[in-house]
Image (cartoon, rainbow, N blue to C red; front, side):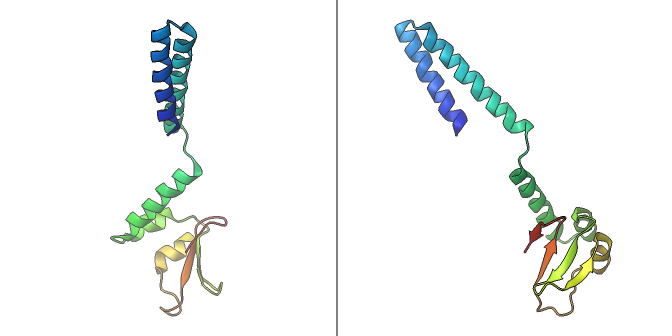
Length: 122
């Protein structure tokens, strides 16, 4: 969105600069284009925490449908655990989860997965 605004502004400034033979307006247009280019380049070079979370969520979904035990276990943090909705720990550690799967004490108990420190997926 910001890139589009900068490019539209650059076109308007450049057009204004051509109509009035205004070098300052054309320079401002060039600067706006350069800034838009830098923002576009930065968007490819920098990965935000939100983008990382979206990518990791997609990986988990693709590992579970169709289910692949090896892929899913590989995605878990080594300190991952499976807990009940009451907070009881069913399984602790990536290897335990990978070997045992997600069978809890009863099938009706809701579980949440803890991926790493303080990251919970319900």
